[in-house]
Amino acid sequence: MSAPARPSRPVVAFLALALLATILALDTLRSPAVDLFNAPPPVALGSGAAPSGAHCSGG
Amino acid sequence: MTRTRAGLVVFALALAAYAFVAAGARAGLLVLIGLGFGLVLEGLRMGFAGPWRTIVTDRDGRGLIAQFLAIGLTAAAAFPLLAAAPDELFGAHAPVGLAMIGGAFVFGAAMQLVMGCGSGTLVNAGSGNLVGLVALVGFIGGSFLGTLHLNWWTGLGALPVITFQGLWGANAGLWITLALLGALGALVALRAAPGKRMPPRRLWFAAGLLAVLAIANLVIAGQPWGIVYGLGLWGAKVAEAGGADLAATAFWSAPGNAERLGESILTDVTSLTNIGLLAGAFIAMRWKAAPGAQTANLTAASWLAVLVAALVMGYSARLAFGCNVGAFFSGISTGSLHGWVWMVAAFGGSYLGIRLRPILLRPAAPATERVPA
Image (cartoon, rainbow over all chains, first blue to last red; front, side, top):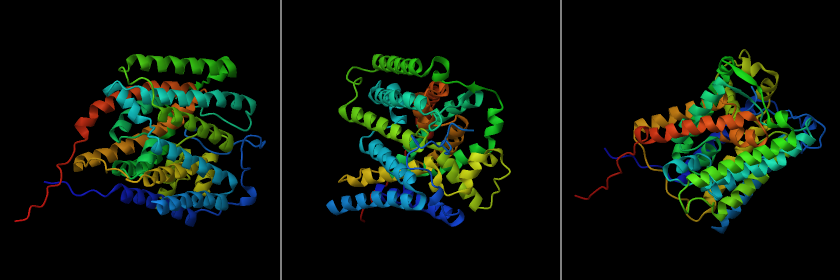
């Protein structure tokens, strides 16, 4: 049995971007808008604030 | 071609501007850093899983030596920065434990089956690799599922967090890190075949750029470059949208994780660089005059093997406290012992994965030409 034709790289790349856009859209619909007045300073170093992000190394 | 490239520049700027407007300046900067990661990894063909394979199969050590160089350059800046601003920056520090070691081993095997690690999966998907796209779906699912059982796995036994800074101080810790990386580079050079020891110019350039971007990530985000947390968060968001109640789970009820889950993805630093990375790989692929051929087609059973391996890869990355980026690259470059243990365990797993590849990944028969009657 011969293999089906495969989509080209640009087509697959657009599908990947579409997957990302779907997740972002879903999140935008379900999450509150970011309060820009409470947004962290642009650069953590020198901000005087503890980092608030989460990392793969955290449990 | 010029119009396409102009469109790609506009796309990159629009993505960063969207993050800036929606979530603030830090979000915009992190998307730009992610774009840089994607452009460097895809544009200069630097990766993690590939060189771990070619040192075994082809005795080609050039990519691995470039990885050690990038990690060393990052460490040279990260150690002093972490020492100077311990209240503003933190390293990728995690405990060594049974589940962590087992997770790294399994991750190493799985990454050879999906032909890409954490960053590699994003780069492959963004650059149009069909295996990468299938793997991305599995990786998101697996890294989310890993969060549901993480407490049980870590309960099997773990040491306290051990860092080189804690053992020997920031200065000595850095020098020991650089000496170990140098020794590993020498070992790889000895193992490599003649002509496959010295990285080509593009890999030197890529290693330097990766280090600059990783340091910028640390300075701006306050934490090192990571991949897996963001993908697990995306999986959790999708699961919640599907009706799952994650508030009762140990991982997602922890204060920091609950905050990430309740807020926009655009407030999660790892997600922001992941978004940029995928888009950057897309831009690098489309920038070329010819985007390149699609990967070899596989049998249906092999596609299933890719999906399962990606699920396992995501799950095991969560147990291992990171992938090649969060544990290996960022763990070692910020002084965490777990990064070194991760590397040894994952390399063993990678060796197994290389052996499994020809068994589990079988090419499909080529499409037959329709011959006119």
